[in-house]
Image (tube, rainbow, N blue to C red):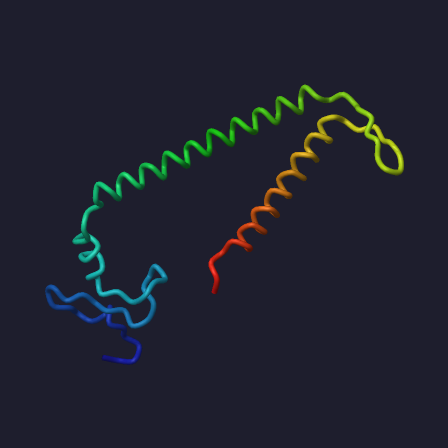
Length: 128
């Protein structure tokens, strides 16, 4: 075998699978072709595993439906509350659209909820 010839250029006997010296064509580890046979012989999915997979898929669909419904409600709320309102601050007043006030209150409530959840998780976690 010359220095410029690879293992792919050499004739193979029946049943021999060439082994690639470096990385496989798909970027993974070197293969001998036996991996495909091992994957085909793997055990089938159990009924319990299938039930879990279907339950997870159902939850994801439910989350998607709820997210779309919430987005529709927020868009309807924004469209129906475009009037300006007077907001009194400690040092003065301003006039803003009601939509922006509701949106700011929602974002502030969401952030405070995240902070509260993080604080409770930190205080109630298992000791190290």
